[in-house]
Image 1 (cartoon, helix red, strand yellow):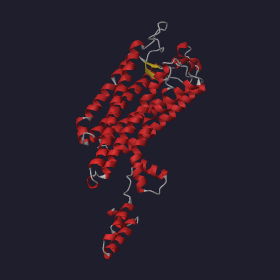
Image 2 (cartoon, rainbow, N blue to C red):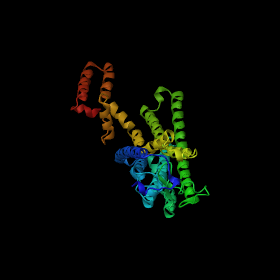
Image 3 (cartoon, rainbow, N blue to C red):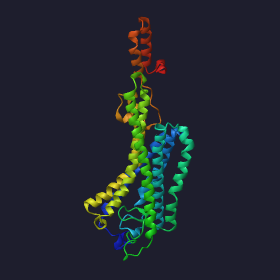
Length: 386
């Protein structure tokens, strides 16, 4: 196995077998967590696909499952003759396949993450309805997402420009050997200047679309903050916005911010690799600091699906906690992940009944006491009145 790997000095480093194994285990663990998270998000969101929000997060979840599945085997499918990874058994075809999936899906996730922020902004700040977004914006975004994500990876496939990158070990649109485009003493086998330009252009797409999402998230945050300030300053207690509506606005702002944070986690780690490459660490990757710089991105980069699950089920978790205040955390989490909706909290009905007792005649109090006792019985008909 080891004899099949390249002896070319351009791809040698001092990473040992155990360190390569830790990379494969780390990215496999993280990707599996992300796949599980995306599965549950897709399962819950697909129950009501009339909402644009649910359709967008479902698209992101499907894409994340595809990306996570490829990440699990990516490091093993790089060309065995172009890496010092002793566990690699791939070839040019498998490398091209992994690189294509990575580039296409990452760009598509970037666009849908930005669309998610735009959807929240339009509905909260500009008072667009769900139907308005679905009619005038959503079709355009699907077309743009597909149209912008496919051309460059397809060109890279046609020109055989998917090659393993020395720092991450992943197959990217890059020249081989790495650095041959600016080193006159090294001849480029594939990629060259064009491969590097395709990779830079793809990265520009990802970060530009991400910037759009960040701007929309900030605008939404400012809108919610200003709305809450006006409610507190310019309205009387009787005129204040309904409490449920206030909670909904805050929840939408929080969710939008957290989804963009999960997406930021995805795109920031490739930048860490690029910055590390500026300090000429290729020949000492086995040292503790360079090794950790490589290991951490391999864990955090694939985690978006798991982070999206935390954001998606948090409101459901809170609703179940209110409905079952005495249940354990495991029970509440299990219910939040289930397809069942949380029941109405019965103690609220009893509270309303008790608060009105002092204003009622004795006969009416007796009647309400019966209703209250019935409402508190699990098998009573009074539960329907709650």
